[in-house]
Length: 90
Image (cartoon, rainbow, N blue to C red; front, side, top):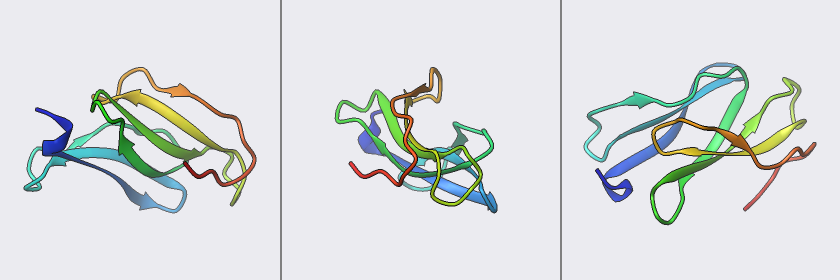
């Protein structure tokens, strides 16, 4: 399935814990991709649809240790691209 047929989103379960999910455009086929402790925001597919980029708060304190994470579209091989102490924008 191509990324144009999928939706990627962050879903909060409780404060400072969220998981990246993908699902079909009709809401079926929900799959959890991440499960690390910390808050993740703003997931987007790369233009070719092979990867997902998202912002992750790993420090636990508001507005500290925000990093950009790049992973394969199936959730495998997450790689930290930054090590920032501020909110990022791209």
